[in-house]
Image (tube, rainbow, N blue to C red; front, side):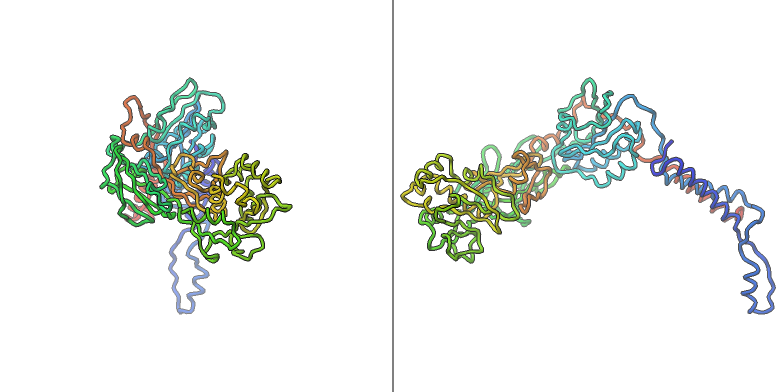
Length: 569
């Protein structure tokens, strides 16, 4: 037997101290003595010479002492959390709690935790490792650690709204720990059966199911939510694709869905496609939060709703000075993504060098050809330096166009970056000369649009954000430069979305949804007949703790009854 809360020597030492303390209290007992006092003023003197409690008297009432000692030792042992130590095992055990979306139904997570704790208690401590599902499998209990630590670490675990990562963890050998010795390994899985569907037992590793979530046979869910530029051609609006299906894969009726915008229910213009998908037409693209949900929830709530933060396609406010090149002014006025306004209301200005026009705004500044490069990018102090290797290409200037500009200006066309208080772009005036050919090139409107959008730091175009996938930024497809906040935080070009909910990328808010068709269909499917759940190997509750507390309570009741009958002081 071992103890979870204290080592064995501490339990024994505590028991000895407790017995000594109770013995001392039993010796220090009350006695009665009759004292006749002639005057009330002598009470104080009588109290001093006849104390109520005295030491060194003959020990009496052994039964009372043994009874209270038994009660105290039982409660002390219960507080130390005794545990029957399982025998040594010839194989290693890996326990995996798949706390992903598959365990969000009913009380599946609580039952999976109880089964996990019971199996862990019944396993050799030196041969077990416990992992928690996540983008990377997180160890919860290392070999040799006290199971009491696992109980506390599981207290804050909640099922996350994301697909299971179990198959990925096995394929990438993230589940090492106890199995690093090279011995045969048993992997215990606790989650939804679909999470382990693609994992099979091998020669050195056997998969067993410790708990599997029950299916929601009538499950329905939202499986697609995305935005694209409005087919009507209105630059400030977007069309939203919505798809919701039932357990049989068929589309959910339109009247079974509810739509909201920034938390308030709205009535939308819906076009039903032949394939059952819905198109919400001409939604205002102003950065609002659009959501769709089932009118009646089911027992699997993970897919009952989805949200999408719409792209902000409101026109960028641009102020044009009197010295702004005519080609730039023409490109701005013809582009519905921009609105010409006064300097005090502008997000970005276009002016010539030396003009006192919108000096406190990000600016496209037209300069004379001098010692500086043809393109000078000024970036804010709170952001990373732009990548010059892709800066010109992202603004619509190809290598061929650069060579053409170099022949026209008879100077080398290059770019450089500088830090500053706010963004700015300085460009040679010769590049805007109508006779130079660049204003007439097809790349020129793209250059103006993307340069002004970069200066205004316009929000990106995110068509959808699905949990368990990489974030998709389609800004380059719709006349905007790639968003720096996404690019700065991307790993090898990818930014992984861990789970559903609101994600923060710098100051950019992204609404991530669990729109997974496979997950919605699997939640409604019964566990295959050939998938067998291993019975729990130990008690799901701490029986020794409960038994000790119950016995201590019965002894307390016995002591009270004996005192009531006068059989014990």
